[in-house]
Length: 220
Ligand SMILES: [Zn+2]
Image (spheres, rainbow, N blue to C red):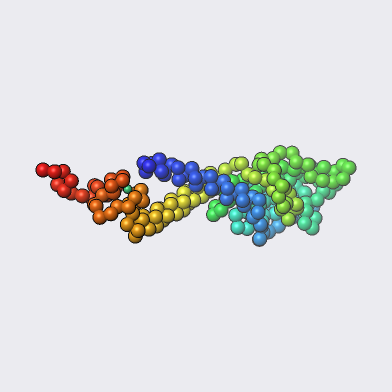
């Protein structure tokens, strides 16, 4: 196979692995550490978390992370124990979750916007979402749903794809080297595994013929 074509195929495989890894993280990765910044009353979280909508009055920002996952919950609600909760007369009380997943870099993201609905019982209503919903364990903090992300974070996605492509290329080269070594050891042609005997070139596929000096193969 031509080198350019081989590299291209390796990169495509790397991209597929990058998506697979990100989706695996989206389903199973756990947040193991994090911080919660919450304010009570009329103040707003300062400084504002990245990705916070400028016009929002942010009262709680929950940033959690773990291997393969970075989870942010940005809300106008006040934090009540382990959940953002509604309080009368606080305005719209919108919530945004932003989840970035992937390994070794975060490579794909989904986000979701909720609105606190107060009647008849206070609950969150999804206003807008990106990502495919899957039956998976919810995030422990606040119980928000997990989704399969469909939006790439380009720098992470390309970097992961390159890393995976190099890894796949390395494994393929190693397997080929082992195969060649085994064939050589058993007196077989490295290319087609045909018994080579004592001749300089493989009688089946001709591999190795180029090693023979021209004078030896062309009769005078
Ligand atoms: Zn051969």
